[in-house]
Length: 184
Image 1 (tube, rainbow, N blue to C red):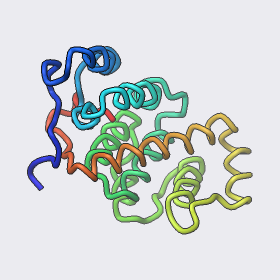
Image 2: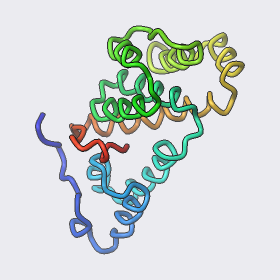
Image 3: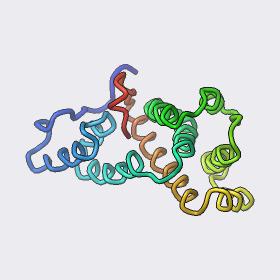
Image 4: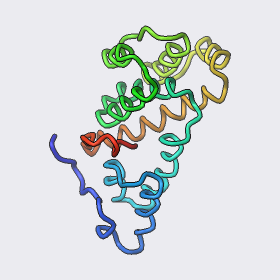
């Protein structure tokens, strides 16, 4: 599909004056209106609320960069979400994940990675496929190796990326060529 299914709100003037503050809030957190928010601004109050949640996952997450990137990659792959996948690739590059790791996730195979990275992928795989729960052994190992805070952030990051993936998929939002706009 070459164009989105809904009107994209790129300029503040496309919104009623009473909704301009929602637009402004998104710009304050991201510096611009990224394509997913151009869709979400069709419901301005919801867009602003999701923007606040997304601000954490995009800019303030405390998860190790490699584990964060792996969580994004696993989720984007599971949802076949082009926009989220491209965003995850940027994160993978920043985290210096080997291309072979990214390629393995893209193929749906287990990457040759560190124990913590493989554990993160397995935790995500269990949440994303099958019965959507993490078995006791994997959960215990994740908490022991990564800590409760990291495990909570992995699960929450997965949920955020899944939500944004369904939005970009539903409205056929393609990833922009300019990677600076790649923010969910």
